[in-house]
Image (cartoon, rainbow, N blue to C red; front, side):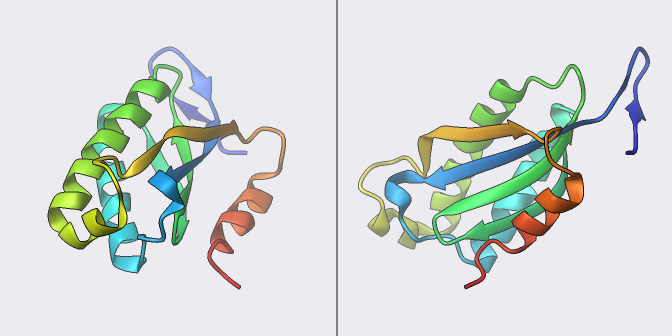
Length: 132
C-alpha cells in the first residue's frame, strides 16, 4: 500500500462515494459524467481530495478517492453536490425536464472507507459499473 504524507502525518485514506440522482432519474451519460468528474477534481483540490477511479450508471456515480487527515469530507461533498448541480443544469438544460424540482442529486449519499476490502477489488467493482 502506498502511503502519503504532509507536514505532520503519514496516511492512506481512501473512500468509496456513491451519489445518486434525485428520483433516480436516468440522466447521466458519458458527457455529463465527464463534466461531473471535472467539477469533482476542481473542487477537490481545495479539500486535498484526489480521484483514484470514477464511473457512472444512468442514475448514479461511483468515486474512489483519496483524502488527507484534514480533508473535511462532509463539507466537500456538500460543496460538490451544490456546485455540480448548478453547473450541470445550466450547461444541460434538458436535464431540468427529467427532474421535478431544482435538485440534481439526492440529499443522501453513501461514503465508505475502503480499508475492509483490497483496493483492487474496489477498483474492479467501480470499473464494471454500468456494464450489463
